[in-house]
Image 1: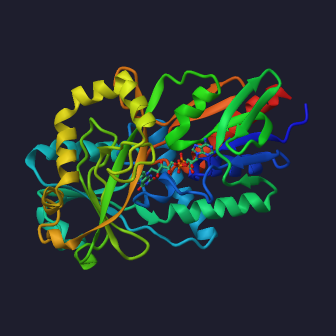
Image 2: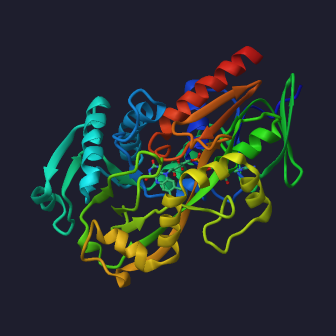
Image 3: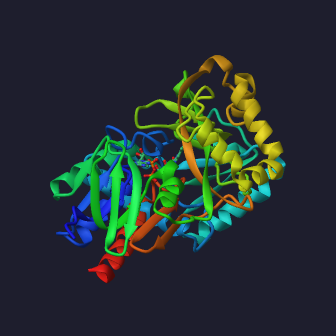
Length: 402
Ligand SMILES: Cc1cc2nc3c(=O)[nH]c(=O)nc-3n(C[C@H](O)[C@H](O)[C@H](O)COP(=O)(O)OP(=O)(O)OC[C@H]3O[C@@H](n4cnc5c(N)ncnc54)[C@H](O)[C@@H]3O)c2cc1C
């Protein structure tokens, strides 16, 4: 069989590129091709996020998220330093503004310690040492959190891949996957065929669709949740990163204030249902994709279970005043006029049939195929370890197949 490559990766976001990068490093000589439907890397989740190198404080000890975020944060900082990519270890504050949040803040301290992350507990008065304009009842300071531009990281990974002989084809949308005993053939929307021994699916917002194209039932669906952002017109109000205490029922962290590498302060993201997988505004509607989301029983179960939370998020999406009020809990000086709309992002959140929001990273194997089925935040932080794990599995499949 004339293979075009050994491993074919679908998706040039940070996860697909990290997997390809790890393959070329772990097994030089392995022929790797990446197919990306867009004209450049990182145009979806990887290029539309908060740019925060997460410390790993939030995640259940022992989970992939906890292990890979802690390791990944250190590796990401090293990668940025080695390649001259702007980054900074700023530290961050997690601030409780209501009494009911205090036990959850305390639980985060414990969790941080279990995950080996240094945290400092602060009383109300000590918050001003870090953020003079932020108000709260108590806070914790996490020193190892940082910021970088994950789009630039993806660009560097793509460049390193090119230098090591891997091929990245842009404008190549995978439309058909044909898995046979001898390997996998994919056809792109423009009719090109690529044959590989092993397929790696890192298609982000489309990963469940690609899994089904390959003939697998992934047992989950991607339900897209948009996160809307504003830029703060008076960035001097915030020095670093300020987060609320998250609701543990959701994998979202709540609207936060993030001083990015561009010097601006970004406010967001909220979490509202997107009406298309790449639905970056309410006006972006794809009826077929929306029908697919609505046909999934898990979507209705989330709506029934979490309607109160969802209604609050919707209200804050449709009313800038309500959004500003939410921000004011952390930063009382902020006004509606201080918030200028900024580009949104959409999270690829895997949801099970029973409405469970999949919390941990999810990587599944089937014959000659590895599917990355849940890689939401902090997967950009954790991308280098995730990439190595995917590469290890792909090489295992390749070894068995040769
Ligand atoms: C609002 C928001 C804020 C976030 N904040 C943070 C943060 O601060 N820190 C952090 O660590 N993480 C954060 N994340 C999460 C992080 O951005 C993602 O976990 C990460 O970017 C996922 O990368 P990916 O490669 O899996 O997906 P993507 O970047 O979405 O890449 C998938 C790629 O696959 C391509 N593709 C899809 N289908 C096909 C097909 N059929 N054929 C060819 N190509 C295809 C797409 O075009 C895309 O380029 C955030 C995410 C969002 C949305």
